[in-house]
Structures are given as structure tokens and as C-alpha cells.
Length: 140
Image (tube, rainbow, N blue to C red; front, side):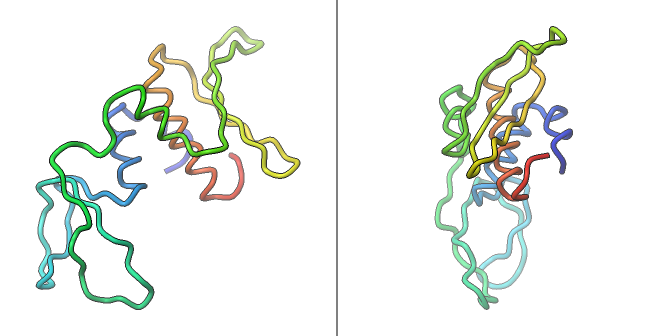
């Protein structure tokens, strides 16, 4: 996935992406059972990270019926990694964008998404953009 794909995602898809990024399996995902067989998750499940060299399946750490990323503005705000600041800005061409910024040493990193009029949707998208940028180590 690249940064352009974020704009095409629904709020639900953004929440699912964030849940998977935090280690959650979603209902319908395939998982390895304790006996080595595979199965389909019927709930949200978070597994402990596999230590290096571990080959056997593990029991889930957490299992729950509710989505691990609530469909709320508070959850969207909490999803943005620490150190990033967000704002809604009017650009020189008259368009409005949601922008996030973070200082990396002496370099300012900034990412933006077009405004759809839905703050919650935008914040979930900004959280994905920030996490992707942090994993890549460079801004798009």
C-alpha cells in the first residue's frame, strides 16, 4: 500500500488497517491453531509477537468481539503516533487539507490528506500516513 491508497479507504478500512498494524487479527482472517491446523477467526484476536526462532503457534493474548479501534473521534486522535502534530489548513490554491508534521532531528516531516469534511475519517487516515512514514524512515 502507498500513501495514495489511504485517500481511497473507507473509515472502516482505515480502522481495520490500524488494528492489524497493532497486531490484531480480524474476523475472517486465517490463523494457525494450537494443533498446527489453520482456521478462520470469528473474533478479534491479538497474538503475542513471535520471538526469534519460534516455530510453534501461540495462544492469542487477547480475544474480543468489539473492534479494537472504536469508531470514535477519540480513538482516531489516539491512533496518531506520539510526536506528530495535526492541523487543518487552507492551501494557496484554495483547497483544504489535513496536515501532520513531526521534527526528525533538524528536518521537518509533513504529510497531508485532502479534506472530506469528516474529521474522524481524516484523523484515522493521518494516523496511517504517519505510521507508514515511520516504517519507511522517510516521508513520501
